[in-house]
Each structure stands twice: as structure tokens, then as C-alpha cells.
Length: 376
Image 1 (cartoon, rainbow, N blue to C red):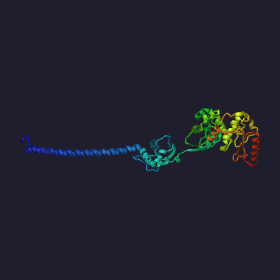
Image 2: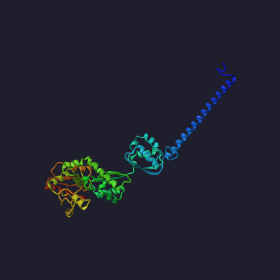
Image 3: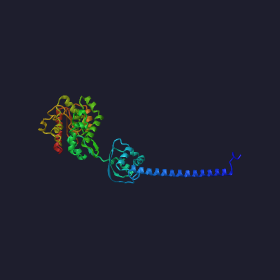
């Protein structure tokens, strides 16, 4: 029995001793694991802090307290996502981390509407502060340039130089390279007439060539809107000829309601083989500005732009026409007028005539106006 039971008292004592030792071993193992777990937790915590310091760029800060110091320009490019913008801001030293910017953006619906452009921010701004600057498009650094309808090329370049802060010489050099500007093939190298009149917002570092290319692209947009190429083909004209007619309309009229009728006069005279006899084209030929009249001597100038001496259209545009003038050139009014004259230079009132006799009577009205006005 003793050999199959629990054994002798000595044997039982030995068994109890082994069990106590196993209990002590379990406690020790638990304590050791607890220490290891604590060490791993501490390592993870301090490791994250160290990595945060590496990637945030400022000793583990997830976000700068703001408001920031100094000044730095940041470029937001077309198509940049909020994530890309956040990365750009980190690289520029504006925000501490990309995550901080993304967190700020997640609570602001306007963040997805940040406009491309250059913004002036500060170094070490809070993410919310940086976002507040970017969501307001008025904070973009731009050079606003307004080019009105009817300016000649030289006048347009001078306006851009004055308002856009680009040397006139640079603009003239850029205009001398029409291929680089992206002119349509039908422009036949003419820059005159293809720098579309509009208000532009240029980036501060825009080059002269980039500015002019933007204006040509805006012309292309307007040409598409009015279906210039198809409309010209319907009239039996080239797109360049239509733009040339539009430029004359722009120079000869000041009222929108007269544009399509002036277009009709031009086409009627062309169809009849009559010289256009337009003072606007003579003024362009001789480079005069500021008057609607020309002298007998100027009308003798030997230039293809002198429509008193040469029949047909001049070889190219004489001003920059707007969309309304181009549309009028494509859709002339119905009528058999062959003459027109502005009889009031203040209001722009224009009279149209079918015969030379009717036109002569209208010219007398203008002459009377000029006797009473200092605008002539």
C-alpha cells in the first residue's frame, strides 16, 4: 500500500516542499512579466514622443500654439488636396504636423475649397490659424490687372506693366514671340486683337510670357463661347477676318446696341466692293490716339490699314475686341445701310444711312454737335 499511496511522511513532506517552490516561481514570473510590460509601455510612449519630435520638427509638438512669427509665402497649386497642402505647410515651417492641419481641416467645410494661389503666412502658426488664412481667398497674393475693351497692343502692354509690376520691355519681348504665347493658328502671328480684355489676377512671380499666355487662353475661351470658327465659316470668312471686323466694331462704337449694325455696314460695303473708309483703321496706321477724326494727310498714308486707299479688310485687328463685339461680327443685323456716323460723342448716339445723301445729312448733325461741344 505504501508504495502505491502518498508515500511515507518523509515523502509527503518532500511533495509539499516542491509545491511551495512552484508557487514562488509563478509569483516571480508574474512580477517579471509585469516589469517587462511596463518597460515596453514606457519605451513605446517615449518612442512615440521621440518620433513625433522628429517628424513635427519641434521637440514633439503636435501643433504650434501660434499665432506665429515672421512671414513665409506658400504656394497652393491647382488640384492640391488638403493632405498635400498640409505637407506643404509642414515643409515651409508653418504648421508642426500634417495631422494637426488635417484635424483642423476636418472640422471646417471650407477647407476643401481652398483656392490656388500664393498666400503669406507666418512661421509656427497653429494649424487652425493657418487654415483660417487659406480658406479666405482674399488673402491670396495677386496682382489684379484690368484690361478694358478696345485697347491697342501697345496700350495693353503698358497697362499690364503699370498694374502688374512687370517691366514693359519684358512684355514687349514676350509679345514678339507669338508662338510661345499659344496663339491659335488662325491668328497668323497677330498678337494684336488676341490679348483678351478682362480682369486678371496674376501670381506675384508670373513672368511676362505667362501673363500674355493667360490672356490668349482667355481669348480662346471666349472664341469657344461664341463658336468663332464655325460662325466665321458660315459667313464665308476666316476667324482672323471676323476678329478684325470685331476690332473695328469695338473701336467705332460705344453702345452695345449699335455693334451688330456697324457689322452690317462693314459687310455690305465689302460685298459691294466699296472701300470701308474708316477713320479707326487710318488712326491705327499712323499711330494716332485720342481723336475720332483723321486729317486729309493721314488719309493719304500708304498702309494696308488705310481703308480709304485700299479696299477690303485690313490685314489684322486694330484693337482687342471683347466678346460682345466678336458676337456682333458673327451675327450682323439685317439692313441695307452703307454708312454710319456718331453724332454725339458724349452719349455715343450713332446714325445709320442707306445713301450718301442720308449720310451727308447725318454728318451735318455731327458738325453742329461739334460747334457746341469741346469733345470734337
